[in-house]
Length: 467
Figure 1 (cartoon, rainbow, N blue to C red):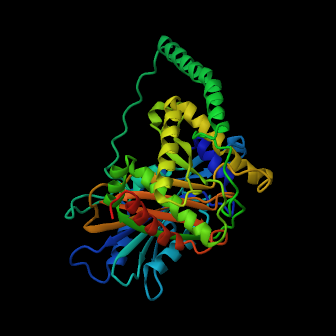
Figure 2: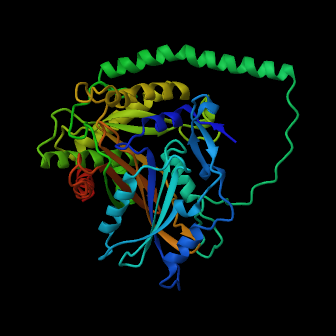
C-alpha cells in the first residue's frame, strides 16, 4: 500500500545525485561478550540478518509512476531481500582503525538503490584488537540524524546479561493486534476540528512576515539568526565529488564540561569552539584561512509534536542557527567567547519564533546552499555558511548489544555541493565522539583535523585556567 512522502523527504530524494548521496550513517564499535569465540563476527551477522519480522520503516522504498500521478510515494518492497541490506565484511591487514575508517568512507560514498528499501548495514570484523564494528546507513528521507541514532540505540540495553534483543530493523516487541477502526466523527466534530486547524494556520501565517523581517534585519546587522549574509568563501565551498573520507575520534566529555564551567559557556559551545580552532589550524596549514570569520550552520532539533504538517512517521523537524566561529582570532579563549555570544544571540532569535516559523526561516537560510548548485551559480554568490556542525545527544550510560559492550559510536553525515565538510558528534558514556565526513578530493588530509581538535581542546583548557 502506497503512502505519502513528507515534503522534506521529497526534497532529499530530489536533491540526491551521484556526487551527493543523501543518507546519514553511524559506526558502532563493540567488544565481544565474555567467552565469545572466533566465530563471533559470523554469529552477529547471522543474528542481524534473521529478524523475526522486519519493521515497516525498513520495508518501504520510493516509487513514482503514472498511477501515482507523478508523485513520489512510499511503497512496500514485495520482494524484500534481507541479505542485500545486511552484509558481512572483513578488514584487510593489519586491521587498524585506519582501515576501518577507510572502509566506512567508501561505503558511505555509494548511493542506496531506490528500487529497494533505503538502508544498509555492514557487520565488519578483522580489527586486530578483536573488536567488531557495525556501519549502518539510512536515507535522510526516512529519518534525520537524531532519529537514526535513536533507532540504532533502541536495541541496546544497559544490562550486560540481557539477550534476545532484535536488530534495529526488527520489532522490539511483537506488533500489537490490529484494532477495529473507530467510529467516524460526526459532522460537528469535523467542523470544529477544521475551524481550529484553520485558525492555527492563520495565526502561524500571520506571524511569518514579522519573523522574516526580524531574521533579515539580524542578518544585515551580522547578528546570529537562521540566515547568514556574511560567510566568506573558503576551500570547503565548492563543487564536490561522490568520493568520501571519514575520520573519527573521541574525548572524555568531562574535559569539555570543565571548560564550560570555568568559562560560563555550554558544553555545546565548547564543541563548536573545538571545531573553530581545528578549522583555523587546518586552513592555516593550507594557506587558505580567510580574514573574515567562518560561519557554521548548527542544526537545532524541534519538538515535532509542535510543528504542523510534519509526517506522523517522520523525524525531519530541524531548525538551524548560523554561528560565527571566530576563526579570525588567534586566541582560543577569544574564539570560545565569539562562539558563545553567537549561539546565545541565535537562541534568542529562535525563542522569538514559533516552531513553524523556525522551520520556515531555517529553510530560507539553507536555500542558497541548495539552489546555487542547481542554478549552476556556485562560486558566483557568497555561500550561506561554510561548514555544518551538529551535536546529537546519545546514551549517557554504558550499553550492550546482547552482551557485546558498545565502546564507541561515531556519526557519518552528508556533504553537499558548496559544503564539502560535515562535522557531527554524539555523546556516549562519558565520551564525546566526533565523526568528520568530507569530500575526499575537496578536503585533503581530512584526518589531520583530528589532531587539530585535540590541540584545540588543550588550548581551551589552558585558556580556562585548567592546565
